[in-house]
Length: 344
Image (tube, rainbow, N blue to C red):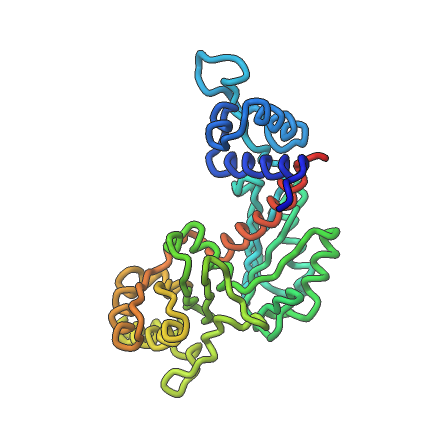
């Protein structure tokens, strides 16, 4: 067994402290010592190093009447990096820009039309203002190949063509740009901030204008060999493709009981094969149906699937695809920025 080198130990300690500051907000040196278990000299060196690297700064004091080094509160430099999440749908593109702490600092939206490279570049520039971006994650319908991050099949977004991801990177001066399936990003948001925070295994059914699903097992998204994991829309239910019987336009003409029955028939395939223990109803229909729809789907699922399965409606507020895109972009940026904090 190899012993960690001093530079490796510093990198580990730095990341531990940065993650604590990210999770808990400003902390004093004594609080960092208590939470990390590190010695006083190690924490002092760590603070000096992170301040010198432009990652943390003095953010106040821990008491009105207290003074001195132990009273200082240290917080992340929020503007050290900025990221963008993009939700590219068939009719509209939405962008949110966030700082390193995840705070939203800009947003913009435009109707889809014309060249998609120009469109996305323009909306990003509008949302970011004068801020440079460190990572961009784009959510869109369709299968995204894990090997190269490009779309495998048509997604009905007007103007979509091969090579868009590469073109976006070039336009943004080499900024990392990642394409991800919209349902997968919604599942990221659900696992971090929504109803699936306590679940290592779950399936999210995306029910709206488009129909799909995301599979999370062991706390990780499962994309499949070609990016097709979760493409439940192609499944035949009673002789008809699932995507044709549960869209938002179809749901408007159905009684809730009938709609729940149709959803349960699709969900039963996942439950039978994967036994996830939890099915989350997302998308416009899942969120609008709420707990009442989830209860009816669960009741019907008990008669169709062999494993006990809980069904919950999504609780992510706002746009879950956009939220998942921002969270994913933040992971990329933090790994790069935090990983570069230690000096040899």
